[in-house]
Image 1: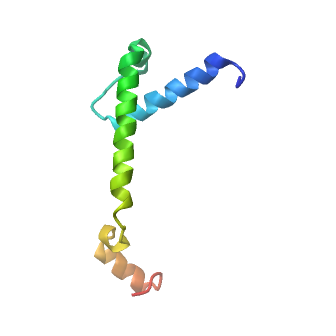
Image 2: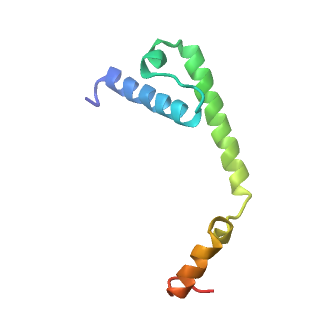
Length: 87
């Protein structure tokens, strides 16, 4: 199957569909609608979403994540009492 170009193209297009419907919650595009949409529209949406992903990654590179910012203090205290983490 990997030598069949139409199979490879369909895999790529399904990857694009998956990215768009998962990242763009309001899109609400069915797979049938995706296949019927013109390539310019799909390309525009996909490239715009890739630009947004790049921008999000650039913003995250500048921030250091502190695990205590994300954890519930009660859970951290319980884990310390159980000896699973240190102070």
